[in-house]
Image 1: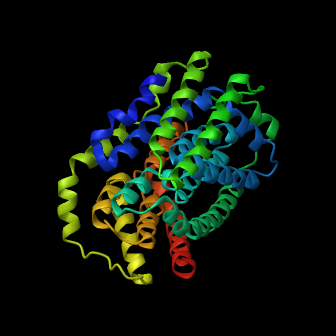
Image 2: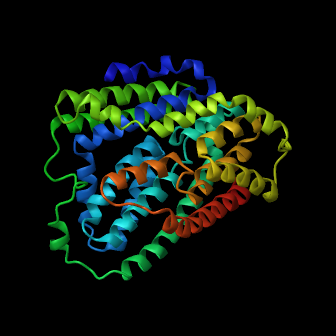
Length: 381
């Protein structure tokens, strides 16, 4: 299993600019599944359960998934967050909804900060020819602003949702048997070793990014080592780790590679954004193009289109487009791979997220988070 993950950067080389996203969609879900099998989801769930207020638990979860998405990519955050959210929510339907909302919003919104935080970021940066440092400098304030804006909406909606449900005593809720509950107990030495590898891998990825290194190879090596530890210790199996790879995500990237020609044709019919410093209307227009494409199809095809359309564009235009693909993509359940992963994990845990309620709630996060990010891009970029 470890050797297979380690070989993915070489195997995916023919995909060109989609090579790095394809590698990450193959190696990151097994990494998240391995950490879950080794007990790290349990640690996160136990820590959140110690917070007495359900509203504070939701905020705590949101902050955890923001950080996880930024440092370990939104795919790791999405897989882990949904599992932890079900465990923390227990038998409380309202808190399950709130925790899964924190999982979906946190993993998506936290994915602007670094190029590797989201597969879409990597695709756009390769197409636009923007350096790691230039991207981080342009994305920092929009990332902070959208995190604050979406977090405020999450707190407001969570308070209303929690108030609508009759509370269940903590002891009764904690005593329920839940298939998604990671259990309890101390971490093994193998789990601590895996956690150390992931921490070092994240640090090396940031340093490699600033030095122009191969980010995909760093994450492939990290996933290979951690997956080997999980399988070798008997906590998981290669089959289980392999099943964590999302078929939909692989299909989306391969489809984007096959549609490269039609995307180039479509991009040629759109006006090329000006190379001069753009104003608010231009940034909003670019964000809407990215967001609508992501909401209609998915953010990975939208990113593949943007890589052609924004070739050679300024960093602020690229960040504006990513506000669309990463934040406005929340508008629909299929707009982001992270949303698809969260909903799939939740469904396996017995908690479906119907399309209707999702659509009625999601536009607020997309609107407020996107507007906050674009305002920061204009005022502080």
